[in-house]
Image (tube, rainbow, N blue to C red; front, side):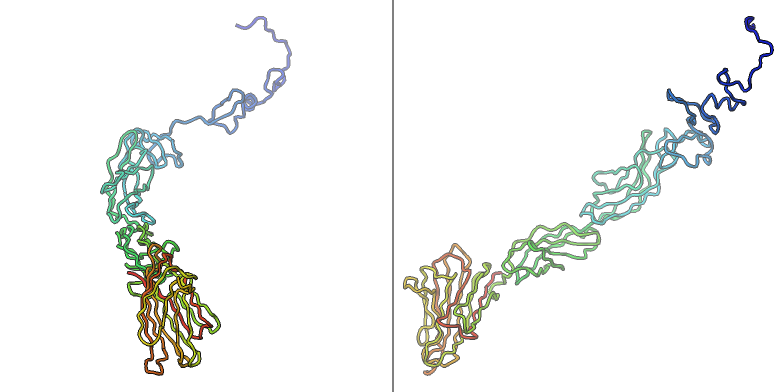
Length: 469
């Protein structure tokens, strides 16, 4: 019923549009009126009004899903989108692997292909890459499972997508692979097996043999291990210290070693996949030791006609014994005494040494002096005698046994052949041989030869080391 108290004044004129201060909107159309009252509606068709408690805005309403045939699925879906497939009458969810039915066990993976990936793989730690297609006949998998045959440890390998790497494979062994898929709704059957693929790796480490020393080198024996499934292209022996190498079949020669230095060796094998681990270290050898009765030249000292001493020092300590060989060339005039040379060990006279000499011919050729006589030389080597012709000479050999041992006293022997004044009587050579006993236990590290004058030109001393097998 109308309010009887409301009265309309006759002739009242209302402005159009009615301004806001008179309770209007100030707009002349319904559309403008709505835009004046609410956030702008233009271009927001299909959206709904939302507020954060202070401000309002238009938003696109969430759509739970769309529906249609398989061919009508959204062209650019994002993970998590839902779709009701009217071809099959079930909901589908979109994942990175495609559309899958919701709440269904995964389908069986297909197209399984394995590839050997051997580069740098250690022996018996081969690796294969197993690729496959995820089955679309079932639900979305949460995990894919690869199973090698023959069995490995672990027995299966998992991943969330293709491919999956399988490791720990035995070298030179052929494997096939199956793949299954699993999710909270179940596990698929296994796929068909891949074709067989042989796992290959670097070779097995060789077994070290015996290292044998030689002059500035060594030979290193070894026994080859398994190839790792790929042909071995090189075997390499490496020294320690120094890192000197040699390659080849057993035994390998390693050159460039420093004589007198101790070395051990390891051997590696290389194939197309890389280089094996090193073998165990060999026995220790000292370069320059030769086979029994082999003489190795260590040093020489020549006469100059001006020097009164010749010293051979820094004698290597890795031989069975030493041998000093010499040739004396005398330029003194006939009738004069020949040159007299003295030999000192380690630069000074040792104590308590004796000699035992057997002479043949005329006159002594070599005299070893007892330290008790007050002499300063270990021995005198007399080259020449009175009435010798000019340019005469003598030869001799002195052996020192156990020269590097610091426990035992040293021993040795000598043999000398010198021309004598028998030159005029038909007895041309004086021969002497004998033994040396040196009661000092010091190792022999140097030999010094002193002349009673200058060394005659072409006087020659050579020191040899005699090795052991």
